[in-house]
Image (tube, rainbow, N blue to C red):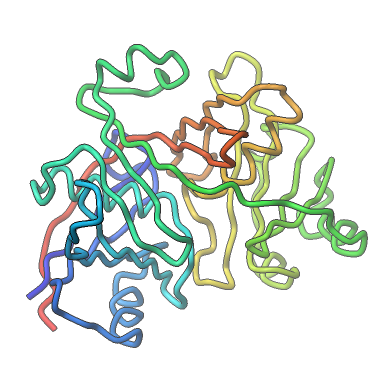
Length: 295
């Protein structure tokens, strides 16, 4: 019998943000990919992730290490921000770790997560938006490069988005399209047509635009990925691995407060470390369900 928790990530309010199912596997328990995918299909939310503790060795530091895998309802993916935050929240709040730092062994290499106390948060103005009593979690992810998109793809996207005013189109190293709208309001107001989005090249489409003045945010975004069984990913943390470098060049800054403009909404505090090519993602999470997998 395996423990599972459902956590809403990048929010401090239940039923907001982005939900993820976090499944705890035993160290000596090997589950095949078909079983893992079947569990993700059963939950049928954007991401179900699986944690397995990695035994410590004498050469490692004192931070606990876990193998972490992420599955949509139809496929395994190699990077996911909100489920990593959800997994970290589950580990910290369950008492399964006694450290403020956790390392994850993933398909994208070793990723680090840490607990950030309210005292530390209050001393960093960049991260004050949306903070509540308790603690935040900071993830350290790699920058995802972007490149130019061919003109044929760019011209077809305006039709996909019903004539929306598109400023720029890029392609990411994760095979997603980055579409820059003329305003954040246009991003928020879009009524997506998922059949049209599914027909586009690449894996998924992230749309973004400058946040409205006095909103308290720097830019907004939404991520659509119907090919992977996720029509809209309510808060895509890992999208900021390429959005932060993009907006850094436009806005000439490296610290951002980002709004995910899905129906559930969510806030991601982002800091770009240009020198080390890393992106720090900070947010909160709420546990909404606990249970067991019986098979």
